[in-house]
Image (cartoon, rainbow, N blue to C red; front, side):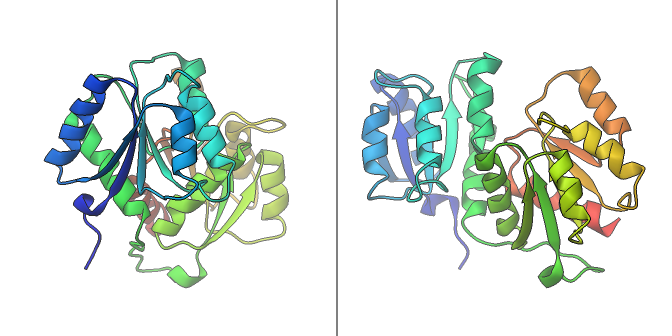
Length: 263
């Protein structure tokens, strides 16, 4: 029997009694009753040393740290680095939200949030916990190989985790476009997922190189927190097949990869 949303175990980190009550009720409305509620970052770090929730929901600010410090610490520890993370915050600053996205999270929702977006995030958490392989007519899933390009180790790990949920186990990694090209000269890959902002060679420069090279047949998907429309337009013109925010969900990734690889 496949995993259902109501089967999820959730850890909520929220210092406000009012906010935690609201989120608890939304979770109960979704059928989720396996819930622990804590008030600060250190309590959360102590909790995940012995328990592995399917999803950690966090606000941005606590009395002892921010969600940035919390998620980066979680991602840096082997016992907790793969825990699904969702941020719910009224914070809109790019400087605060981008480090969260770079750490690999399922969703960043505003306060107040749309219940449909909340439900999508719950589905994403569920989808990371069981494999739902791509359905491909012309390719053998067992031999499918991808290349993930990002200067953030945690971001690469997060995308690789989502790919595994899509049934793709063989994922090579590179820290920037230049390193990706070196990999391509040594290994054959079926697709590339790249970030935009990287040192030495960014995602746009990589895409432009690929279109002029013997690797022009490889489909490229970009997952980025970049929001500048002129830059993103240039990326599309460079030959990128699809653009997604860093909070891409497994279902969207699965659908896009299927279309890219079949076409």
